[in-house]
Image (cartoon, rainbow, N blue to C red; front, side, top):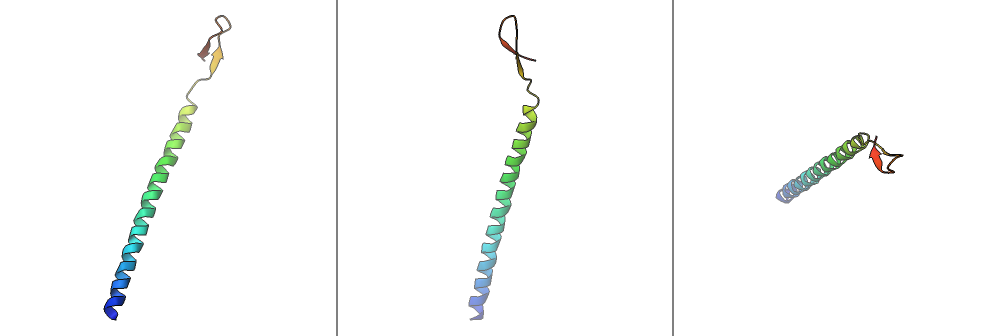
Length: 62
């Protein structure tokens, strides 16, 4: 009987470790996505708006 309790405790700890490692991996992936979105937003401010050239009617940066 004590052997079964010990085996059950070890199995529970193994499952707990697997769940913890999955949570760490998921949080790392989410953080990478958040950082990519921040980088994308900062690049959007670097793009100059297009203005219409009154002579040609074409749109140019500036």
